Length: 198
Ligand code: SF4
Ligand code: SF4
Image (cartoon, rainbow, N blue to C red; front, side, top):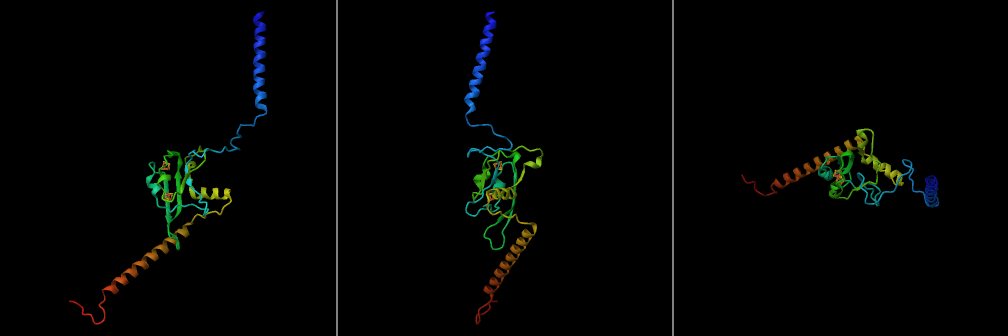
């Protein structure tokens, strides 16, 4: 009989303890995140995959397609291509692909970049259903971030743009070579009145 009343008391006490916890948290702010509809802000120290920085001055990327990051990556995950467009002093990236599933987040690519063009993203939703989900086209991803930030979108050069730039570069090189040859020939020509040595 004593045990019977003891069990009732213990049960009543645990009910009160549970209600006390419920009442205590009833007025506190909600901490539940409605994933996947809601995203949580990540700490500045968080390392997602490397991505191109949007330069605050130019509102575009700073990649000059030097391929240092691609050569430095121990897992060889980066493919960069670029070309110098007419009137521009440096090359500009026309392709920047990164396969992030094998990325160890070692940071070598971000450290070696001469223009500090790379940063770690705050993206934590990295799972995918297919292998191709891991392949990120960073020029397209940059456009999405520019759109979200409400800044001008950097166009990705088309095949025709790249071919035209390559043709212009080849023509400029040829013209330079011709000019150098003409200068060398003029330097060899004897001045009027000067004897040609046999
Ligand atoms: S963080 Fe390391 S592994 Fe990942 S892409 Fe950069 S260099 Fe490669
Ligand atoms: S090291 Fe920097 S500038 Fe060079 S290709 Fe990589 S991201 Fe672009």
